[in-house]
Length: 535
Image: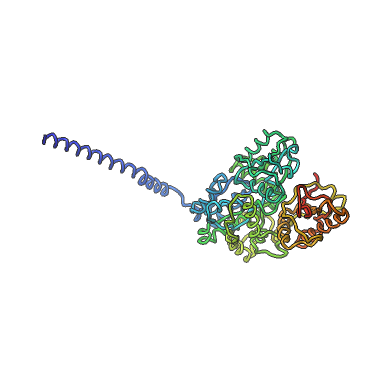
């Protein structure tokens, strides 16, 4: 028994020893493969490579949207090379939550966002790890809501329990749809109005396969807007050219990086503004850039499609950036919208349409942007078309003495009474019923806030006329009712004019009919209808 026990014990010891050596050998192999070998290989690469030309590598999260083409351009890279800065672009396919998390974790130092996308991503994570340092562009037609004329001849026809809006969730185009349902009166649009699709191409395919008589709208972006309009019977209900300050792209810098390396952030902003100036001065400069950019990022564009994008994107110049950040004021700013106001109204749309539960900034809108980068350029009288003494520039074209100005909104033409009759309705604004004194046209104080909000909305829709219609009950003296309705329409129009809406843009008329489905005080209120010229 003892001999058998001893031999068994010896056998077990040998097995344990063999297993131990196998484990040690295995660990050694793993350590060599994953630790030693890479270090040796890295050292070998380092020993047999040239020294890098760059002292700094700034990683920027982006996607293939053509509005970012200037930032990705060789012009910007060449300018930054003079300062030993390299930009590396990380494409996350417009996954904004991932983009924000990479910014938060320091995996990227900068990122591009639309303002609404940054707000939604920040609301989801509870943090805004970066500050807006530059306004890149605003889309002016590159995003659109389209429909078949037969099914939805105008926006008001979406006030239908069967109506649906097909869109890509968490896209800037979704925000366009949310602006529409938040600002326009669509009382019968159902709560489940949204139908999801994966990208503009998918939305376009659903449009093509839809019965033209269905009450459906489709939200997409270029080049699929142009493709959609080529389909028989399809028209635009609303596009981003009609809005101001909602679909805006910005450059965001991670806060620690911005704090520790402000000169690098300023160098990127300066190079961008110089390149933007250069491309805008060249004949077909932006068109050619977008064609070349599309070959590297996304799907290659033909010149016709690229031209549609150039027309549908408004790249912000230096002075416009100064104005948005509150550095240029008064006549210089030409009424440009401040970032504070832009962020505020976008958050309002997102909260009112349940895209986010509440204001994630709690009204502290200045915390989402940083004016120090542009302030330094403003103080130094930076000009994008003139070479700085410390920066040997690329060819920036003809030097000019004055900065390119803030572009003014195209003013609506003054109309004759006959012209007013030819206008077609766009939509009725969503406004709380305006209350007046009993039997008179004195606006009650609690309704002044509703009119002030309407004033702000009209400033965001600068390309439409407005018809203010005074209503009253059908019973009683018809002539007296008509006079009261006109007086109330005039009072509401006067309030809007006193708060910055041009009188030539407004027509005040009376109706002897109450608003549709209105009762009580609502039947004696006023309604506000946006109008446009028929095309």
